[in-house]
Image 1 (cartoon, rainbow, N blue to C red):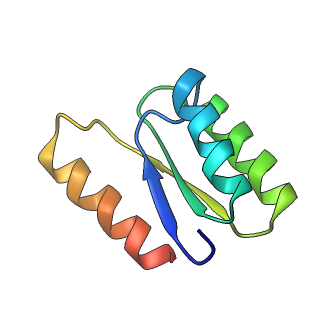
Image 2: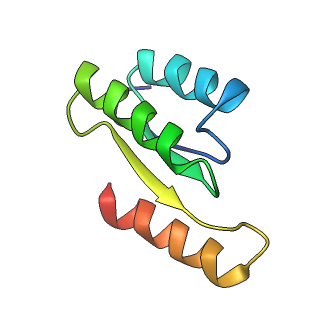
Length: 80
């Protein structure tokens, strides 16, 4: 999975965070998405970036809002 980028929605906690860590362990860069769980998402990004610098980034937004979806996608593309 090296040189791959994975966007995981709702990845700040529980199954999403576990999935992010799992895919990260195989070399994928991770785009951590959250809507309201920003502190948890920041903590996850910090944890992943300590393992492999610049391998995780945070995007925040409400996925029920189309303009947020477009912005989140563009941020992910621009970062990697």
